Image 1 (cartoon, rainbow, N blue to C red):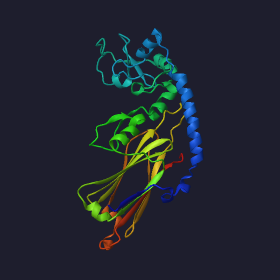
Image 2: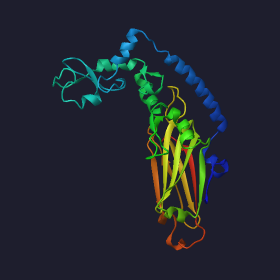
Image 3: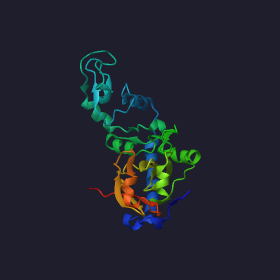
Image 4: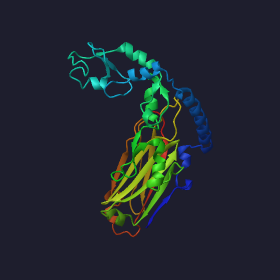
Length: 308
């Protein structure tokens, strides 16, 4: 069909990314061992009556989210507690109907933050227990967090977690994650493909830095659109893991036109998609409209960014 996707290392300048594959494999085995030790330490939850009751008492009575690492509000009349998010939406106490404003309970906040409590994704399978200091980072990186299908947007109604998204990719979308940091796409007859009203979509899932990244290339209505999504870690991470910043290096070359390059960064914690849109006119000047060499090459490389 005039389109080729090349994922060999020769198509991407791996030296510029300073990647040591042997070091990454060693690091993965170390993390896996730490991971197993840490999960063993925290997954052995006590099942005594006190601990069962304690878990319920440390949840917001309205939204059922863990109160840890959150401001806690209590009613001055009945003393029932809720998180600050629920308290801000109430005009009266949800339990005794008192109209006195809820007060912040700092003593309870300090107590709850010292406890080891389940991750908010525990119902999806996470077994790690957290204190107030480690909660935010772990839950931001947790591979049991909720996820909608990043491949079949609008057509696939799958909901799951990062832990089982690969099985969904293989069985439903016939998509096998590539163990690589980047790939290249070459389009022959680019303008004729981009002119079609029906979208031509090419999707690649990359497995690198122990994480999954999904990149979609879409041609439609004289535009080239690139979508980038960082799904997160494939395995449960130790509590000592600190988030890193990543980005996708993009180089677009039109053989009879212009060359574009840039970097699309991801935030440390977000899993939102990033998008680039390039018009036909941006790639091909008017003087090249009749040129027979109608080819576009795109090089995409996931990189770890230095801290600023």
